[in-house]
Image (cartoon, rainbow, N blue to C red):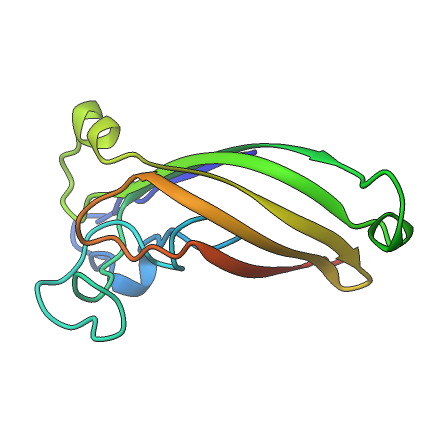
Length: 156
């Protein structure tokens, strides 16, 4: 799976205000970029962040994530009876820029990667997964997490 976004302000000759922190993208977490906490990568403030290293997350104006996974049903037993799947994955992504001038080198150099394995299953409300990830490429101020639990809601 792949996802991405870019935030570009529209001024309309000063009619619209500049984007605020709540308009920016935040990347990380078990269902987006495994191996990193929610809002665990990208620009950070110089202070704050008492519960995670590196300061408070500031968000960014450009992000992408990509993930590849292979899963199997256990051959037999309780896990197979309930449709629980075992899987291995690799993911990569980045979050850059609170400034408006970005280049491809900044994007490439700030890409984070992780690989790991997990167990997942479906419920009537959505997907549940437990993963163990090894961040392979990360920044010094990134908030990483090896063991993660994720729950994704399904609508419709």
